[in-house]
Length: 262
Image (cartoon, rainbow, N blue to C red):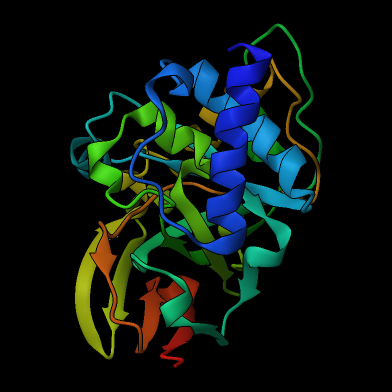
């Protein structure tokens, strides 16, 4: 993408992120055509916003999500550090237009996964994980209608991340088969979605390997970063005021409250 086109589209996105004005669509001349161009815009947007990155989200790791967004594989987006919260947080529901909820497994990296030519294996990325945590991703889009734009546009928009809420570290995760672990999403006490860890690309660790291999040709992944691996509970839109809980059975829970302001 040419410098002038990149600058224009980043300015549009930065305005949406900072002020909140939704985007109908990018101008045709600066609309990304490929996932690579989408990541190019995302890189520049991070620089423009000047906010620390706390980690990554991997989207479209389930068949459900891929059908919803009409994609053929996963996508990646940064999670900004100020948008990562601990379980029990209270968030302003009216600050998010969509308030999409996804229950998923998140990894905290204990080691760098550096750029290199050779692909990373599942065993290698698993060995780099320091913690596994229950998580709920709060999904939002800077586009007025996220289902009407292309996948590269969604990638440019940080993969539609709005916030990430993390539960306590899961004990004995090394001896637990995450693929079979049940996950239930509840809103105001009612189950609105459920699934298992294997819904995320067959195995959350395979999702992590996918991201590590995308990033091995870029800047890699860094120790301390959080990587959330994709929905196990489908996608549900919450009201501006709601009590949200993702129940991971014996592995723990993560919850937060949305409150209506104004």
